[in-house]
Length: 89
Length: 89
DNA sequence: TAGATAATTAGACAAATATCTAAATATTAA
DNA sequence: TTAATATTTAGATATTTGTCTAATTATCTA
Image (cartoon, rainbow over all chains, first blue to last red; front, side, top):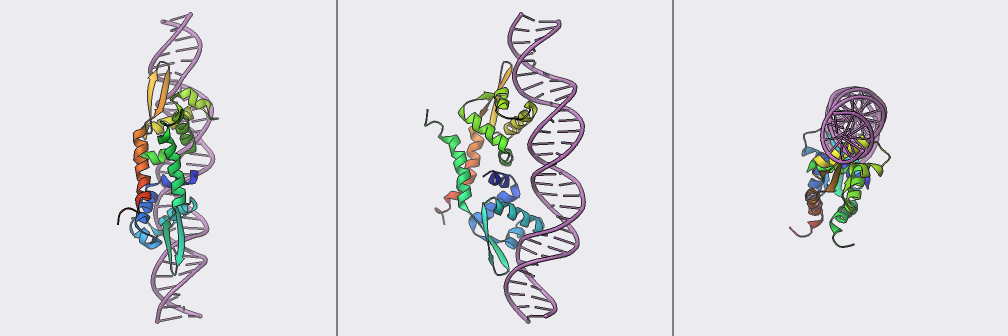
């Protein structure tokens, strides 16, 4: 899960996640939202993918990215532990 | 809030937060939990502090650190937006 | 005030990171 | 099969990051 925190530390990657929150997008559509070269965005997508935060699927010439909730939920659980405290002891 | 994500990306810093989850600790007590020099821990503490995730208070010779929940909650809200989705539109 | 203890700041350095350009791969369509 | 489009991979580079040692600051106590 450490990889997810690393992935979340970059603002470009967080913005990518926010974009995908609305709907799946292909790499080109994502890149169009940034003033950055496509290879750079591709690199960020690869980090998000290997951290488990997004998944990709080829659709013809395009590669469509979407959010994978399972790792998000793990990270959320980590935060929840800090809120719970009042309950026990 | 970007600073908080940056701060959370390092495993040592996350472990410090987990330690402080139990109770406030001074810099020396925190350093004792790691195989790392005190200056390195001090550096991590300073990053956590400037990100708003912890606060410090001098008590005599010691400086006691504890978690500041307000930024935690902001970060949590960011994650919540990814869960909510089902509700609107 | 001098010495001891707790912690930080300063400065150096290797490793990791984000970005770019150029080249390669994969798919579609003519 | 050739050309066009979408995307990634490779390689280079400047910046950021995490760590260390040495020096400094702050507090307490004898």
